[in-house]
Structures are given as C-alpha cells and as structure tokens.
Length: 360
Image (cartoon, rainbow, N blue to C red):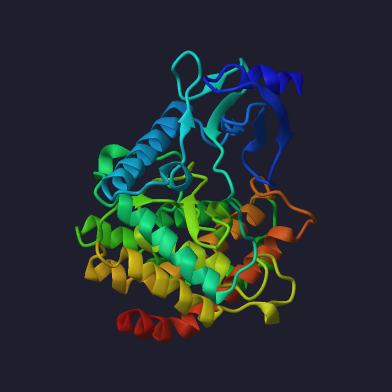
C-alpha cells in the first residue's frame, strides 16, 4: 500500500488518496483502483505497464493520448454532454509526462469512469450492443491518418509474420514435438496462402489500414446502468490495422460456443446468433465508412483471426511453451485443436456469414 501511495502521489490528481486496491484479472498489466476522500473529486485507475510486452512506453502512451483526444473532440462536436463517461482520460505525472518511471517499472493513471459495469458472458442482445460500440470506436477514429499512431506490438496481427514464425518453429522443432502434430501442421500450412489475402490486398492498394483496437473482447467495453455501451477501454494495442481483424477477433472470442482451450471439441463451433447480432450492430455504426472490400471481407476476418490464433498456439507448443502460460504440458496443443475446430466451423458457415453481411 505504501509503495502504491508513493506512486499515486507522482500523478497530478485531485483530492486526497484514501485507498488503493487491486482490481480485475488482467494477464498483461497490474491494475489498481485509487479512491479519494473528498466527495467532489474523481477516483482513478493506476496501472503498472508491462514494459516487457510494450517495449516503447513513450509510444504507447502517446498513442493512447492521440486516440482519446480525437474521440473527445468528436464527442464535443456532436454535442455530447457526458464526455467523461464516454472517453478515457489520462492523468499526467507531475513532471508532465504521460507515465511515471520508478526506476524499475512504468506506471500510468486514468480517471475512473463512474457507475460503469463490464460483462464476461455473451448474449445476442449484448453482442449487438458490443458490435455497435466497436464499430463506433472505429468510426470515430476513421479519419485519423495512418501515420498518426505507431505499432505498440510490431506485427501483432500480421498473418504473414505469424506464418513465417510458424515455419521457423517447424524447421527448428526445438522441443521434439513435430512428429506428434504432423497432420495438424499440414492442415495449417495448406491454408497459409489464402489466409494472407489481407496483406496481399493491402499491398495492392485495395484494402486500407485504419485505427483498430486489436483486442475486441466484450470485457474491454464499459456499460452504463441500463446496459448501454459507454466507453471502449484497454487501448494498449490500438494501432494501425485492418477493420476485419477487429471484427474477426470478436467472433473468435465472443461467438465461440466452447472455451478457447476446450478439451471437448464437440463443444466448439461458431454461434451464428451471436455472429448475426454482432454484425448487425457493427454494420449499423461502422457501415458509413467501410469500403465495399472491407465489408465483404468481414467473414474472412473471423476466419483469419481464428487461424492466426491456432498458428500462435501451435507455434508456442512446438517451441516448448515459451510464450503463453500453461496449466499442464499439453495445454497449448489443446488450445490449438480447439481453435482449429472453431476455424473449421467458421469455414463451414462462411457463405452463410457472407450472405448475412450482404443483407444488412
């Protein structure tokens, strides 16, 4: 507590800190709520930034500032009166920087958004609201030029980079596991060329890069007391990318009838009710800026992101589990099979998905 109090004191906050407590179960950053004693002062969120993953903290914080400033300007221009609940607000350190370095760790602070809730489970009604929120987030940022933001994790959603890394892992076979997964490896490699379509279209000038969130899970969205979306949060991976990646990442996580590491593959498939609901909300708020190519490729985005995660899990398994935390020796392999089963389900429903998108 004493150390956190000292850290909180490095930021330009209002009021007197009366309490600091850990919140959430994030896998990347450590997060704390900071309460103030006075009734007329805000509370805050303090985070220790994982600088092993986000190596350029200056770039990371500058990205977030540009994104939140842009959204706030859009809200002001539209006459929005509740801006502080609908956009994050960074609190600068007392030296003017957007972070504080204590000699070992990097810290940042934001104003806590009051009377907000998050969700972990998914329903069609919630999926539609989530689609509207992430579509609106992209729409608000669609006029930011491509060079306005940097890559906080280089090549994060670059499928060509992921496939190349996968091939290098196959060649190394450093953990001696390749012989046991040869059939799955072949299935993945057979799909590699078509899965790189987005990068190919980008180089051909047919698919734009825009500002994307790159982690479109429902728990990265705050809702008000009536269940309406307030604000997209967790902006660490907000950077240039393809809108179909954001769309696809939600379908991969939110429309999976099973768990990401489900041991029973019969549980795993794509929930088309969730897909339709999310698509309906997303197109309603993002449709005004999407090009015909982007709209057409949305179902492909679901396929690409699920393929990418299969590749990443299996790469880590072949490398001897050096990246993802595992609970048992075959965990990454179990994850790989579960993601591959979801990929097969999406492939089986791809035409149905495309027809529905075209009908909106």
